[in-house]
Figure 1 (cartoon, rainbow, N blue to C red):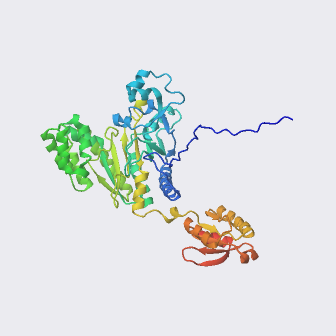
Figure 2 (cartoon, rainbow, N blue to C red):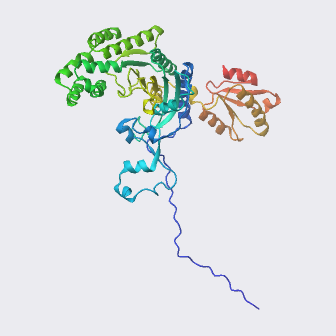
Amino acid sequence: MVRRRQPTSKISNKPKPTFITLKPSIPKGTRDFGPLEMSRRNYIFDTIREVFRLYGFAPIETPSMETLQTLMGKYGEEGDKLLFKVLNSGDFIRNIDNDLLEDHDCARLGARICEKGLRYDLTVPFARYVVMHRDELQMPFKRYQIQPVWRADRPQKGRYREFYQCDADVVGSDSLINEVELLQMADEVFARLGIRVAIKLNNRKVLAGIAEIIGAPDKLVDITVAIDKIDKIGIEKVEEELAERGLSEESVKALRPILSISGSIEARLEALSTLLAPSTTGSLGVAELREVVDATRALGLRAELDLDVSLARGLNYYTGTIIEVKALDHAIGSISGGGRYDNLTGVFGMPGLSGVGISFGADRIYDVLTALDLFPAATSRGVDVMFVNFGAKEAAASMAMLKQMRAAGIAAEIYPDCAKMKKQMGRADALGARFTAIIGDNELANPGTLALKDMTTGEQCCCTIDEAIARIKA
């Protein structure tokens, strides 16, 4: 008889792996949006999108990533630093010299291991799009884009690393009718949103003319960077900064009466016309401003229209009209802005194409609507009607009526479980449902009827599905 050896258990000295539970997080400068926030954001996007469509703008989308060749050098040195670069796929350091790695030269190393980047704005990708698709486009081309952009900026209140831009541009036309249309469009957007705004205008040629007549044409950028802060720091501080930037005392003194022009828009245009008469460029800028103002007023504008000779908004970018929109009832920066630019596509080998555009700041608009409590009640509501669930037969009858309500465009749902009434009504309150619908024994005995309760007034009635639909829609 052969005895089998009983297996012996072995005790391993190998340490057991430890698992660390990490608290979930998202990258700094990004945000999650819950159902209520998304409903409100979509209200803003839908409002802007509908106005864009009414004015003949067609939608396009461009990739989240562009080649760094497309992006680099378009936003200045500081802008290049704020680009999010994307590592090449695979073993991207295999062919990198060890000397380059040891030098810690981020710029040179980044150029070798990154070929793509997240888009910084929607304008440069649009310029690239126009050049690549120029044979397919009918000029003038009117496009809009509502998409996120990314900037590696320091996150702070009101400034994020990922945010949406809502842009509309017309390219291939020099006509000032386009500027007038953009002002009308901005007026319509903010009227629909219920935000009282002031629309400020200036012209790059006016700024160039100012620099010319005060004897500092080579200091145009310095002048505009300084005077753009006049609302924040006052004219005395602006003059101090101009002196620090190398302007002579005579030039600074000559600038003060220009910045102090007051009165109606007509009076200020007349004063500018006289002051800038020696400058051909400045006089042309005044003439363009006058044409835009006159045409806009002839059509009518609900917003306040103002002329601001200190308005610069990205001087190196704009070449003609400059637009900025500010909320009147809430202290915040500009909530929309834009202007005329020449040679949009020149950096991609297609020179001479002029355009004009405007961008709406969805995040700042959201903050204004929240602060002023201007969001419609519907944006806080999940459904119009919630059916209470009393059991299988009642749920089956409710489902048939649900289908009819949804076909009529009414947002409706049924509580999925046969739970206590208190719990189901709590769900209806949480959804912000305007009505609850009940099918019980009485309604089952009278097919096609339901009990409809108004959650605001508490009033309840028995009615047919058609009567319920009519009442809910009313």
